[in-house]
Length: 374
Ligand code: MRU
Figure (tube, rainbow, N blue to C red):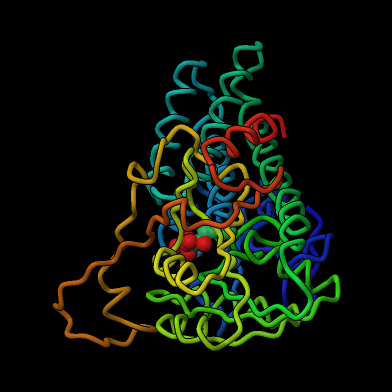
């Protein structure tokens, strides 16, 4: 894709900072390039992932993170895996599909909560089956999968723009908002999910101020959201997570905007750990909580949030900050990366196809036709 370097940051043709892109020139075969999010904001480093294993490692270690971004990265990872495994002499069609299914399993296991990852892999596997069913050769399969990965990335960028436009209607001139984790361009193939309405409202000339939760344990708010808002010129204030209640009571906050990793059929929302607490606080202070997420995050196969697998991450993410030990080295730790917010605490869910409100069973089902046709 067309990529430009501006002020030391890679930008898409649309002007949005990129978190990942396909570089067709790397060793002439092409590779996935991505911003190493574990090193921001100190260092802006670009990684080159030319193998399935490199993409799996990048997803597992949060070098690429955010539900839509890991879906897109996984799609490119499977295309890279296909390129290596299906090279001449090509296996037969059945063996090729079995090889792809195994590779998809490895990618899927890298991060279990965000359904975007599984969704993107299912799309590629379906594309592979259709490709071979229609009589095309195994040799042309890697190119077909790469083209599907490009399509997923382009669709995600368009979804971000649509969510930005719809969500900006929920923001008034002068609003003070709060966001959690990072749901901006670093987390997607476009301008973001929860940050897209904020960027759009800012571009429309609305005056805003955004409280940014630092988002322990790995500080996506402090390291990534503050970086993105500063680059975009959106006025913002970084707070520690335990300050949210205080500023909801006396900081004039008019709305909480968060992303999602999985939304179930009844509107329950899995998102970064701490979102549920914010939702309870927002309800206590009569502040609306808006969830902004594309169709790839909506999992209508799950009835409610109790069935969502919650990723448990390394205890050292809690025991350490920036590598420095802040607790005894053997302290027992719990580290669920996500929590589930019950749908009755969610004011609205902004998707690229429309805004759903309670009762979500009906409103998400009504969007379903649009979601599957979009
Ligand atoms: O563990 P992370 O950083 O991948 O968690 C990310 C989040 O929880 C985001 O809020 C969510 O993926 C939405 S990103 C557009």
